[in-house]
Length: 228
Image (cartoon, rainbow, N blue to C red):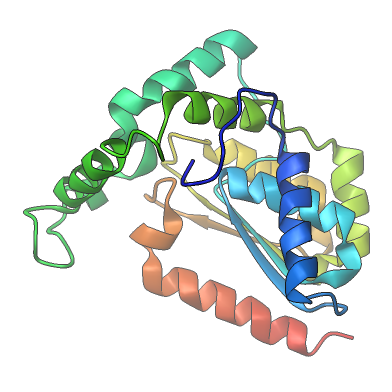
């Protein structure tokens, strides 16, 4: 997606994490506990992979609206087909209905939903930057992401559970809230991982709950400053 190349090949969240690591190394961000990593949706899957590769460099790790692995009851290919077809109902899967129906916070459209629809139409007119091939390859990468309970325990042991928080909305239709519950539990909620479940909020927490979201990030960053 965007202006990067989109070769038809097998993508993975591990590969994407290694791409991120190359950029971090190029920037010289290599000190211990220097990185405050925030991953949303598939970005949260990539963040898990990144933290597994360089746990000693993670200052804090926020995993929002994401999963250790996608769980479904209808089979992989049917689930993938549904995720591809979600292009036709992207608003309803991304946001809560109450947020979509609320007046546009910038005052330029009747509702938030109308603003999002306009942004989505503009994006899709960019046929080079936003391609169906790129979307499908991205969906496959998310579908294949898998972190076992043992892998999550190892990640949390090395990063430190006090440095990790999991955020999820209860009406998320893209990656449902049980995924967040499982992720927090397997990382070690009872041993110090922070779990924040937001009632009535959809997949895009950082848009629907902008101020609270900023506060959750700031609070985590302030907390880890006092950790050794």
